[in-house]
Image (cartoon, rainbow, N blue to C red):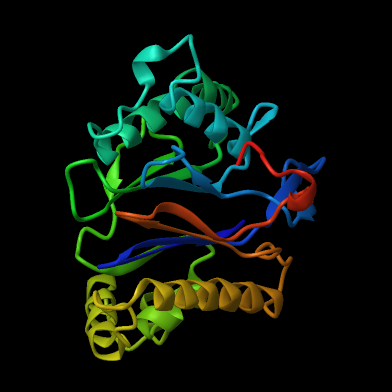
Amino acid sequence: MTIALLIKVNDGIVLASDSATTLTMRLPDGSDAVGNIYNNANKVFNLHKGLPVGGMTWGLGNIGPASIATLTKDLRRRFQGDDHAHPDWTVADGDYEVRALAEQSRQFLYDGRYQHIESAAQAAGETPPVLGFLVAGYSSADDVPKCYMMHLGAAGVPELEEVVPEESGAAWWGQPEAIARILTGLSLAVPDALLNLDIGLDPAQSLLINDNLKAQLNPQMVPAAMPIQDAIDLAEFLVHATIQFVRFSPGSPTVGGPIEIATITKHEGFRWVRRKHFFESRLNPTNGG
């Protein structure tokens, strides 16, 4: 599992994630169990060096032998014009749209890649694993960033969904409970808890009460005027809180490892704030990024 977080304010976008990835094993009875948890997965990406666009992933960690991180770097090579087999994918500085990049990312990940996983799972009567992917940034002609999310799962070619279309806000995926409690004031389990009280509520009524409570308890922690540095600090706090929440909850610590944070702003573009390396940067002055 994971936690992947997007915060959007007037100054730009913050992308943040943990680094945990879970290896599952199929038991003889057909059930799945946690085989191991690795704490060095990469989930935040620069989609084009020099342009204010980035990506983030959650869910399935690899397609076949390739990690999502490796596949995303392959996609970046296409966008940058370094894949000579696909010159038409080259993104021209000054003439591109974030939604178009999201459409191409969806095509790249699904066609001939995730599509095989989906087909194999359906042939076996199983539900294919979910792969989430976010593309966010500034189109060449826009002053306001856009964010588009896709879920590759059992429904065929995924639809793009714009997230946080408002001038500010947050969205998060993976294990959402801790951030939901902090940013909305309520647990995600409140509607079911109301039904479990057996006080005569139907599901629609419990959802209505949940929404009304949320409107009163929401602490409004992501105002549009928040400076980008404060948005960075908030993102770090929320990811860290999720790591600790999962750590002290029953079950495996499936959120953890180093926290990675990047910002996307109109003029500074994509910038790493916190990032791990498997090598010492002083010994590698240039790298694939």
